[in-house]
Image 1 (cartoon, helix red, strand yellow):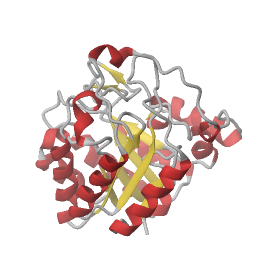
Image 2: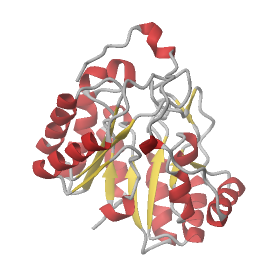
Image 3: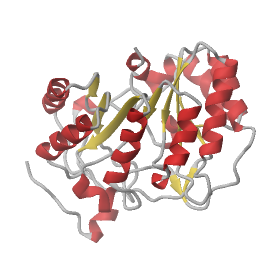
Image 4: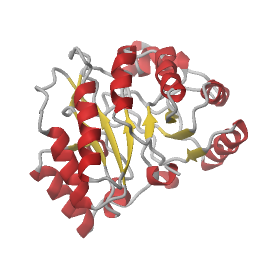
Length: 294
């Protein structure tokens, strides 16, 4: 497989290639989906399902599950793949933890995923709201399992510890891509920093999870090397899915990875010792997350 390095002008290029059949999904709809959307709007809550243009929103919302996006919907970073808005975030909403907890209660779900934008401008990186959200969700929903998909907090392990002290069931932090592509895919992040966050959580006794996108310029061999790096720090759960260009202003799709290649990633991941591997064209970090708890 080929390896590409995007020239600067390619960063704004739109992918014109038609999506293959295996990437086509139904438009979201149905009563459960509509009810959940109304509830989110009434509480001024955000979901990464909407903000990141997730292709599985119809399936997940249709069965009453969602990934809550806290700390607003404006991110301080400008990753080349992400559809979430970049800019100066609004002030933190101190009532957001309770709003999320009530929404989880009203949904009646058994597993919730919480994630956030990066809030690099805050002294605590947003970790105080993170901890309060976990605590409030658990207070109102004692039987719900909680998965958190955290940012890297700029490598501040005190912030990571603040989240861990609230005792989520699963600590997820995505490495997103292979090290060679960080400069264009995640220009304000560092591969080694992300590994450090995952390793720290594992050393504290937590179930750890991470994921990457493919079809953004990596090679098969590079993906396998990332998987080996993750197993060296004993990461438990690994997800891999197809990158899809959210707008013409984002990085172009390099290739559409075949279902057969995704099967290879799953097989290799199991052989390397991951507890769970979710590998497929439409897989996203929170896809089938409820099955990863046990």
